[in-house]
Amino acid sequence: LFQDGKLDGAWLPEPWASRLVLQAGGKVLVDEKDLWDKGQFPTTILIVSKKFAADHPQTVTALLQGHEASVNWLNTASAADKAAAINAALKATAGSTLPADVIDRSLKNITFTVDPLAGTYKKLLQDGVDAGITKPADINGIFDLRALNSVTGQKTSAAGLGQE
Picture (cartoon, rainbow, N blue to C red):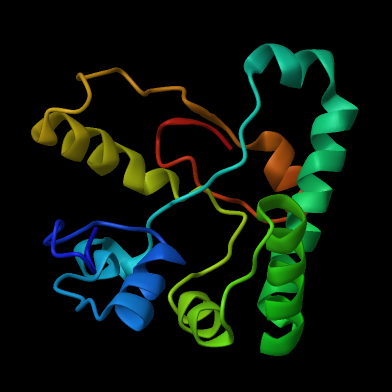
């Protein structure tokens, strides 16, 4: 649509933002990270329900250990190894891959962390309310980071929105 002149702008996560810039001639007008304290905001987080966590604590621990290992790998692997893994997964699940320049640009715009960045959720909620796409809500108690903190050996903050 952008290339056909039917779309003037878009707000996209990676790798779609990089595809628009590199493959369709798009220009970045606002970088989302400039709108956030410390330039960090969540795009994907790992969650389980309270019931699942209570019923399957060993599974949650194993899931968190795997998540931490994956994030550690993403933060230490070479660009070539990350690109190969991403394209192998894309080929297996979507049937096609991304060009190297798109992956390279995308990875430069992403920070991988196990921290859910709890301090951003009040703003995320308010931004959604202000945009008219969500309703006001009480998000107190939304986080229980005890299992995560046990696995990582660090104290990830719930920013007053739950347990650490």
